[in-house]
Length: 637
Ligand code: C2E
Ligand code: CA
Ligand code: CA
Image (cartoon, rainbow, N blue to C red; front, side, top):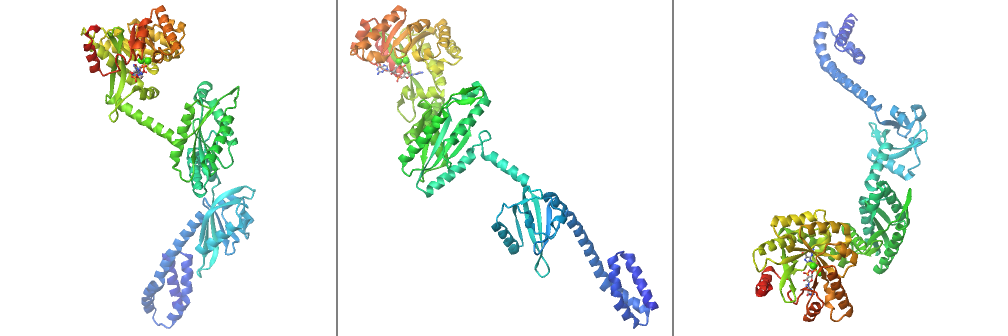
């Protein structure tokens, strides 16, 4: 017993001195009885110590050391688990029958239920009623089949508030692979769900009117096109643009503009069916998509027209703008689609083109898109591009049409621009001047014409045959109404160094009347430096005599439409005679254009119109030809 006591003591000190661990000591003590039994049969304690200590080391101590390390590790894991358990997520642990065993503090914070409230209960006590039985049975099926389920569930807090949680439910299995527990980890995502919805709303809806925006419209159109693939029906796309919205914005301010746009949105919604889409593209542009129109294209067009008329009507009623009412109208472009159509962008483009046609035909109108319309537009776009190119590549030339006395003496010419198009014949100004005026390209083109005419005058300056010639240049309204028009002309004159009176500017009646005060100022300024003016196309506009008196014109040009019928139409003959008499009265020079026959010339001579221009004496021609003509008429000086 002594010996056994000493061994016990030895072992105890040894082990406790190395590892002060309660568990270790307990385990060693457990191992002692068989060990002591075995040493009793031994005689020598020394032998015992020689044999036993390595054995203890090998068979007991080393495994113990490993076990202790494991223990320490699992303790750390437990600590981690404990910290994790009380982390940011709510946790609920149930038994195999889904009766709650334990919940953490976050769970309580989230749901309002404490451990006490929930222990032994089924998690369905949290149910909000927003999911049906199917939802839960699918969830459980998934957990039991795959071991887990993850998703979003609307639950209810103790105070009755509903909340959206993201939950991961994991089944825990025991050593026999039988489910022993379920662990649910839940986070409240109500706030982020609301935020996400808000973001989604911002991404797809116009904040001002609440209508779908361009992105959502694209989606809806995609669906509408897809549905025409299935049925044989038509749909229509209406492009709506408010008339003169910009001026409302400018005069009454953007707040009033916003107010109006909101009312427009309401009226649009009120005038379409439930299945139709009303969207705002931005600014004052709205789009309506009509679905399920007739299978028959004409009938469908009729239906679209009806709704679009209703919309025009609705949009023309006064808008209440806080202090007063505001009257406005809209223009609508319509294009139809069915299963054979089309790409969304193309549809939008077509409706947009049709809308511009509606505007061009006087506003408060609707127009349907058709192919001819598109061709015209595309041609214009192409022409505009080519016109720009023409300027860069110097493709314009001037033709000269002689202006003569009755004896055939050439006193000058009207310069008329031509376009030497690289792929076409010479292009008439009638085919490109209107577009140039619309696009503003008339400004550089017009400047080029004035420059070229002045350069020609300069070339003629020192030749006796040509130095007296005056050139008439057509000036378009847009060019004349530029603020720096006077400067531009006088700079060209100065720069090239010509006598200003050799330049005659032709202004039309409509140009002059457009802004008569501006006209007077500019004409007077240029008249002062010596430039001459001729009133082109006289008789076609509405100039009154008093207007004519106010304006410093040197010449009136009788329009060719009167000259044409001068012989056959007594009315025209009288008009021409009256114009001539009036001009003489005001001491203004006079010229008649479009003189094609000897009879016309004779009439004009007889009625004292001293100067004439027309095919009878020469069509507009290139400079070489014009100079040949001058040389052929040496008596013209
Ligand atoms: P416009 O100023 O009234 O020019 C007279 C037009 O009548 C010219 O047509 C001329 O060729 C044509 N004409 C002249 N004599 C006769 C005639 O006896 N019979 C007939 N049937 N026609 C005659 P064009 O050259 O085609 O020019 C057409 C219009 O283009 C011009 O009308 C003018 O408004 C515009 N235009 C031409 N050149 C210019 C330019 O350099 N600048 C601007 N802004 N417009 C121009
Ligand atoms: Ca002219
Ligand atoms: Ca004319």
